[in-house]
Length: 370
Image (cartoon, rainbow, N blue to C red; front, side, top):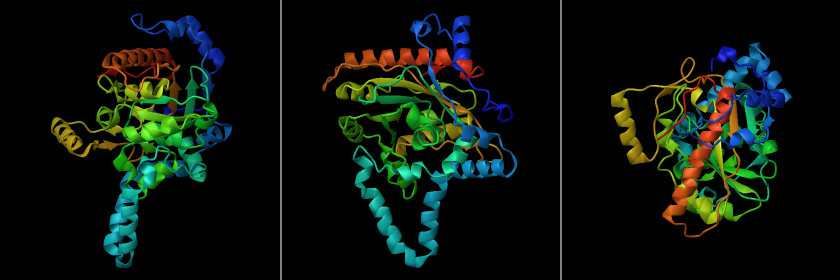
């Protein structure tokens, strides 16, 4: 998607979607589940009027959006650097910084299944500029029951996983309104949540650890407490590039096991636009080094660039959430049960992508699941 061609005002109305369905342009592949043809029209939540108007402005407003989006992108790089730099250069800050780093490492909120969600952080004015730069559209195949707890399988990971930060973390994205009554906690690596400053930021937007313990505690709370898991994880980030639609999912079954153990419905989700924000440098020698680092540190280090360096490409983000896959609760699921639900999940994700790709990603590659 070219930056110059983004038009937030060109939005999909229910009538347009209905016409597309009638013309057959949104039919899934014949070898896949054809049930989408008989499904009701989706619920489409477009960006708010305030976000649309801000996104259309030029001049200083556009400069401000670009600057804030770029700083937002660099958070994971800047925050740890500031800690190290201050520790080295400001001697009187060393003791309090050491105490703070120790607190981050031992922070009970990291693994308590609810995090440390801070609503005023999610409501900060800075988010409107981030959302104007990445206008978010939420699409639901059906309204979800707020009395249930769900596991949202989110794909793709992208470079910096904007689906977890911009979509789920911000109150300006429309996510809370679309999934009214649900409290969705993005799951992040345990180590990411213990990073000074950056970990505090993730916790404040509702993130929890992706550990089994944390996920189980979250789902056990009930009352709509749900988990958003980016299934492909760090490994999938190495497959991120403009037009690429490759997901690491074939052997990722832990989220299915947790769903069955909790009796939590699985919601297949796909975020169109996530993979088009950055370009990734690809080279055989670099890739071998990245895979080695990933095996040792449990996270990937993609080498990427946007516009003029780290400035992200201005891309519309459309988060599509499919119909829930209900499971029979079983505290000790068998391999056969897990494999059966996992196969159904992949089938429904394919169907979801096939249904909405012609509308939201006509130039993207076909979905590949590895």
